[in-house]
Length: 157
Image (cartoon, rainbow, N blue to C red; front, side, top):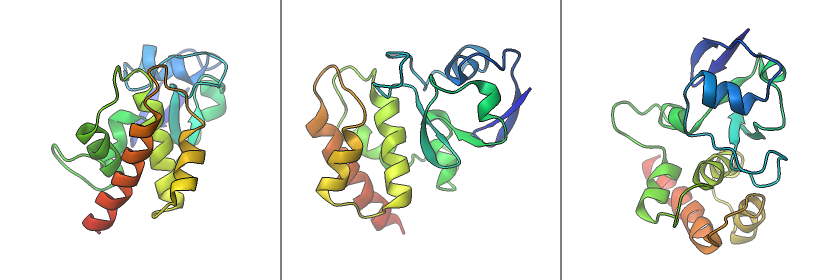
C-alpha cells in the first residue's frame, strides 16, 4: 500500500498497523515519536492534509489518500530549499524545550494552528498548545514559540 509522505510516494508493508509505526519504523522518519499510544499526549502528531492528526490512533490504511507531513517535511511547506526552516521550526530552535520528546507534536500542532489562523491570539495559542503534553512542563516556552513563529511567518511574507 502507498502513502504520500512529505511530498513523495512510499510503500508500506503493514497497512493495518498504526500510521505511527509505518512512518517511524518502515519509513525511518524519526520526527514522529511514540508517547502514550492513546492519542492523549500528542507526541505522534503529524499533518494530514495540513491538519494535526494523532498518528497512533489511525492505521496506515486509513491515512492512505491523504497528504501526510512529518517534522522532516515541514520546510517544504514554505517552499524552502536547502537548509531553510519552517517558521515554527525556527522559533523552537531559538527557544528550545528541555528534553524535546514532545517537540515534534508541539511543532506539528503549531503548524496546523498557524495554517488556519496566521495571527492567533494568546488564548488561541494556549488552547491549541494545551492539546499536547510536555513532561518537562515547557508550556510557557511552547506558547512563546508559537507566537514567535507567527511573527517570523508574517515578517517573511
